[in-house]
Image (cartoon, rainbow, N blue to C red; front, top):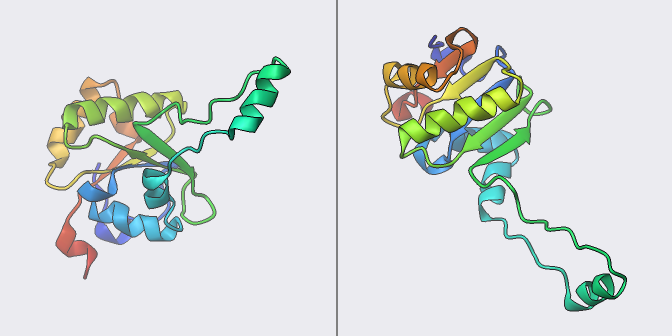
Length: 155
C-alpha cells in the first residue's frame, strides 16, 4: 500500500527501511532528523587497539574483541526519540533492486516482522518493488511504500 505525501513522516510503522543516501532524497532528509547518524556511520572506520594493549591481552591470555561491524550491508538505528517509529534501517546496494528487496525482507523477518514502511530508491516503481517483496517472502499486509519523488520533497 502506498501512503500519501502528507503522512510520509508520520506514525504508522515500527520499522522504516531506506536505501543509502546517494539513491534517496528521503534518506538525506531523514538523516537530519537522526542527527546525521547515517552519514557518520558510512564514514566510520573502526580503529585498531594500540600495540601495548594487544601485548597485555596476549600476555594475559585474553582474547581481544573484534570491533569491526558484522553486518556491512545494513545499518539499524533506534529512532524512537527522533521519529514516530522504533527503528530506521538503511540497506546498501539499492542499485541492485532484487538483491536489495531480498535483503530488506530478510532483515524485516529477523526483527520478528514488524509493521514496515519502505522508502524506495529513486526511479523504482511501487509495483516493481511489491513484486520483489512478495517473491522474497515479505508480507504485503504489513507493508507501506513511499516512492522517492525528488520534486515533491522540496515543496
